[in-house]
Length: 485
Image 1 (spheres, rainbow, N blue to C red):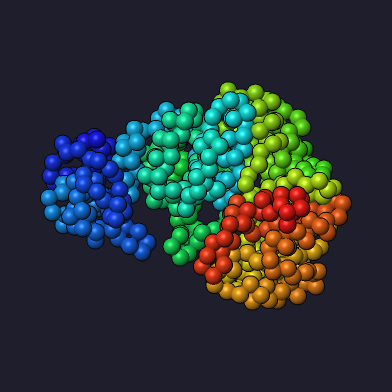
Image 2 (cartoon, rainbow, N blue to C red):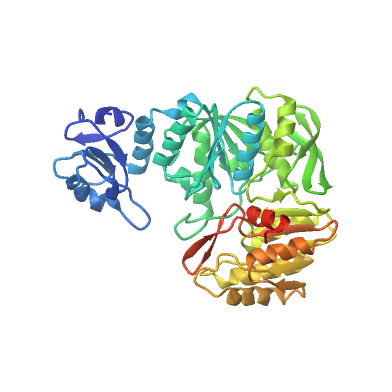
């Protein structure tokens, strides 16, 4: 493409020619080839403006920068914010793929991943091919592409959108994290629908957000980038989230004023199935809607998904089928077993998430609540004490094992967990080998038990002494049930 075409959407000034052919768009100076457009980014640890000269020497035809740089004969495009510029340039480079699909963005502290998979399950049941970009990765058809961030860099997002459009996707559901919104990773995309799930303090400090006000301000941005906002009015922070919104608003929740309302919710439990059932009123009346994910919070996630899906050509049966069968990899994910008990895989890997999952499962009144978990090495030891205390207090039996021990000895990590566990008097066994710990849980399961394998979730590896070994708990369970382990 011509440089002039790539920068057409930017508010910029250019020193040098703009009628030059660009062969590639890169933001890593090591990937520059002859004819590339190199974008300088100010990262948390590295400012790549310092590599502009090297990029020009490597053959870059043009440099995009937000402060003066020396770049030899390369054309220099000056902008106010190179991250925003990269989003707009990337959209142009890939042919504006979002414009041909219905775009759904989800923001909130919790629930983004689950809501995105619920929406996909409903739409795909209706024959609407749907792509997903989020925490677990990018989903295009049956392919799952792992990504580093919940909301990837804008270049990667536009690349994925191009692939989705080419694969025949008609809709895309994207988790819009606060960092992703702040760093313009989704700039240049007009979302047809934006969803707000909930808001609570998180990601404060360090390289994330300086305070809760900035955290909220970043989430607020989605509702200045979408046509219709779907808002959880039961969350006390919803007014702050929609301040300065430029979109139409629709609401959901249990509150009487919600336009899509849930009521009469109840927990549902049968062997291999934990979920919730509720009735729906307002924009749509439905009775006995079942969600195949445990916990009362699943009603909110389902409401969010249904609120947006009602804007698509879906039937009541599509809604029911999608919510009843949805599976979210590693998020209270049920694994089918032959016994009269329930086995779940979950990503809970700190005290708060441990408490949330165990309190949720305790509501189902299991015969025993069994929690298998470890803790990460090279991380705060306090996390281990706290996790041990939560499991000791809430589980009937804890099975202490390895997680990603990294450079630490797994027994030292387990000793720290036991310190918290011993405060509670809770029962526990120690089985350092994670595969053997899973085997113990399955072989000692009793009728009516709920067993949760916590910590790994969607991860398919175990990191020990700097090496990542393949470990997918679903495969381990299959090997145990088939006598291979």
